Image (cartoon, rainbow over all chains, first blue to last red; front, side):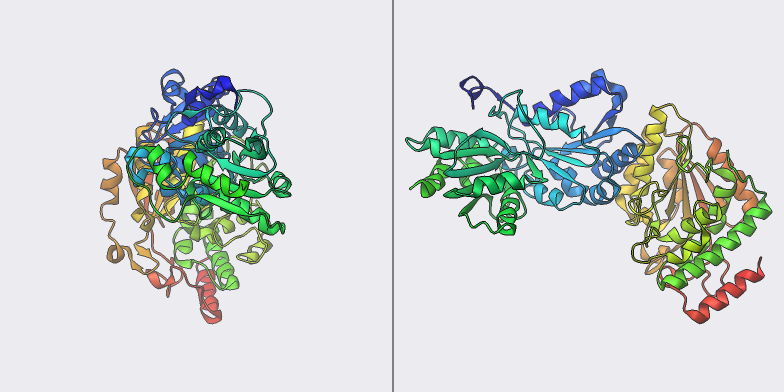
Length: 316
Length: 277
């Protein structure tokens, strides 16, 4: 959360696009598969400059995932890209059987996740993808909060020999993390340290948490903000460590409350007998709708003002 | 290279052994899918004993032909041929569907490394095979990926996505075989959901199509070889078969799609098959 970074806004999907272009240049086995959304997934440069490593599958996500599996089982490192809705929703069974059951080295890239998709409305705002993906054996689930983290998780994903899902978002949002420095899949990244109230968030909605905390007149130092970029495997040790002694834990995600980050954190706390007060922010069993994403976040209690209210409940 | 290079007479004899093993395995397991397994025995025997480039003593050799059994429910036949060709001991066939065994009820790569890709949910295999064929094409390799499918699984929409894809990319290393037996779990295909003119459908998608009697071994060898040698895009062999072939009371009956024979039926089936040897 440096002053320098605060003003820069870039989309997580751009971070993915930049990273995969770099990776593809250096490894001919990296193949990008597209379902007619290469401009949205920021992989048009690969389509043009590295056409031998680009496979257009058309609007046919189920086949794309099967093809990706077959390529992975033949030694390629395929990145199957689409909107998160069409990838994890429509092609879920192909992901389960062809990718996860085979433990195929496929990277699944779903952009336009969450209410952050905005005006396109509920059909395009998937709010269930984390739940769908994290229940699958062999799957690693990554959900970066900004451009830099998206770049890092993409690079790190190639070091995992097995299925990975990366959740990306449409809008340009503030950069919250440094472009270098230590980063490890499976380890929660601090955005701001603090031991009183712990905020565990995932995805670009974390920028609202930062805004909320910066806007507080007092007790900022008591709040810790952490990016849970790896939802599976969840960083149990760090969650337990942070929860012990905390006055409260808040989770926030642009996703259904059922089955997402909040659920994963609650499972860790319950499984380890930790009874810290937990407030889960997210979408409560409903669909989204068209509108500016900031307004949608506000409607669902995920804007900075709503977050401040929740924070103050714990800070009193 | 096929390490067996059998004559058609030998291939027929092996097909009969496959059928007997299929019956024994499914009867022993108490569940399974006999009709399609028996119906495709001649095709599978021809593939493994004459057509495929494979080597049981070097099962993972890089240039091996790949086989994807998209209609995974006929896996007793696949397991039987893998045992017959020496990939694993025939004695282990009796472990079909047993807890902890590699011979899962539907093919599992996780449990059995010789399986190229897991299958069982219909309509998946052709997409995976497309991926394999595309990878070999990108790597300028000549090994083939053979995808076996049922006719009824063509009712799955995503299969046609794969048909379209294979055509666009002219996947010359992709060879499909469809078991056209006109039965499925709950009835005859033309009653449940007709798939008339499968040949025309494939042709309209730009595939090379050939029809064959799936029990005429001599003709099968000619047409499978033709498929194997075709280099201008994807090729599909529509093999017309009789489900339950070789066991009189099973032949042509959809009721035997997914039912194990009881003790008496097993005895009768094995008697009939052994007489044909």
